[in-house]
Amino acid sequence: MRKRLRKLLRILLNRNTLFVLLLLLQVAVLVLTILFLSQHYVSIYGVLLALDMVLVVYITNTSENPSYKLPWMVAMMVVPLFAGLAYLLVKTDAGHRAIKRACANKMQETRRYLPQDDGVRQALANDHPNYAGLMHYVAQYGGYPAYRNYVSEFYPIGEAMYEAMKREIRAAKRYVFLEYFIISPGRMWDELLRLLKEKAEQGIDVRILYDGFGTQFGMPHEYFAKLGEFGIQCKVFNSFKPFLSSAQNNRDHRKILAIDGTVAFTGGINIADEYINCKRRFGHWKDGGMMCRGEAAWSFTVMFLQLWDLEHPGAEVEPYRPTSYLPMSSDGFIQPYSDSPTDEEYVGKCVYLDIVNHARRYVNIMTPYLILDHEMITALGLAAKRGVDVRIMMPHVPDKWYAYETARSYYPELLEQHVRIFEYEPGFVHAKNFTADDEISVVGTINMDYRSLYLHFECAAIFYGCSTVRQVRQDFERSLERCVEITLADCSSRPLFKRMVGWVLRMFAPLL
Image (cartoon, rainbow, N blue to C red; front, top):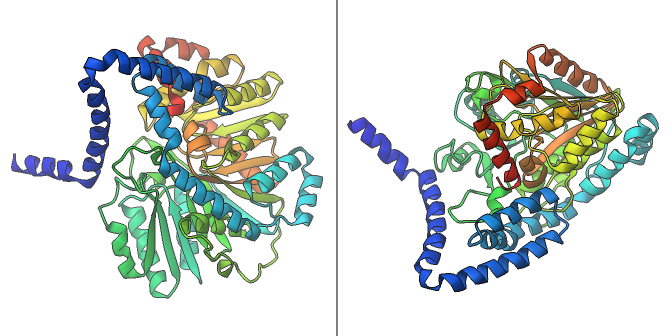
């Protein structure tokens, strides 16, 4: 009994619990304020209803994605007392505006460190005219160039990528930069930490940037501050704070390991034991990623430095650039890129749309989540209707029930348009891979959902016409052998209650 009581007290007095309680308290205060003014209910209701009507007209005329407009307007009809105020809070939030300004300034400062080589641009346009426009778009509007002086490795499973990460950290000479959404205690982190301590003792610059929400609940309070004793610099991105703010939505979902400006990793793998199947949470964890060596690694290094020094205008980048790169014989091109939720350019979504729209033979998509807007549904359906073999691989064992039920609500609509859907029976798919026509692939952190495409900081690499493209396709085909194909009959046989839950969740998916 005493043990249970002590455990309960630890939970109640935990910093994270207090943060959540404070957030709920703020919501309660808003509700009670209106209830205590019940004698003026008619007047208050009338004012808020008028506000909602003005906001509906305003929202209708904004350039926002229609999928975002609809949930807000439905909310204003269902809960007119609060929805309008919530919308104003989101749109006028000072925290979000501060991050937006800082990101815009940082991108402007660092853009000069990522010039596009004209020779590479012309060579890519000659070899892959179908995707020359995409390369130009990402370089011009995303700010990240394409390279051909590189080599890459694709990892179809987290365990293989993890071994490569340790090998490259051991070989580091100047610096090791890590940027992760989730860092959790366990074997994976313990082994990496030992390596990082060794490198710091050797005088190597070791830095860790972690997300303030993704890692908030996994590590003890002040844990990362104590790593400074070992010479490891740590920063939190957008720390989780106990007050209502739309800035809480803008998480750093990127996974980057950048070493010496010459080697970089990205993919779906966070630093936690389930990503390398040391711990079974949702069956077998199917993840993956890539490593690039050579000039392309510089783009990932700049990505890291952009967020590391976000709050410090004029921070230096050039000192971290290698003085030269060895010539490398790649069989294609690579274009690393990142996407920020603080501008109006949704690079991650536009890359996926462009690939689907230009595909001629097949499109293979591996993603843990499937929460789509109308544009993406239309693009996938049109591709399938014009004869492209469009296949989507999803988890059979979900990590979040509500995300799974929402994804399932899209299945019938896609299947009716001849998009094929498969679920990975052994467990959970967390890889984010996109491939078309043996010509182009994307490997990175970008899920097929609203959070990745609109709200999170993300990163990935586009591969044009190289062996990595074929390796990503081969991994998809091997994984298909362990999948079950979903049919319209499967969708119809699902319990009506679950289907209704999915329909409701889908309606508010852009706001979740």
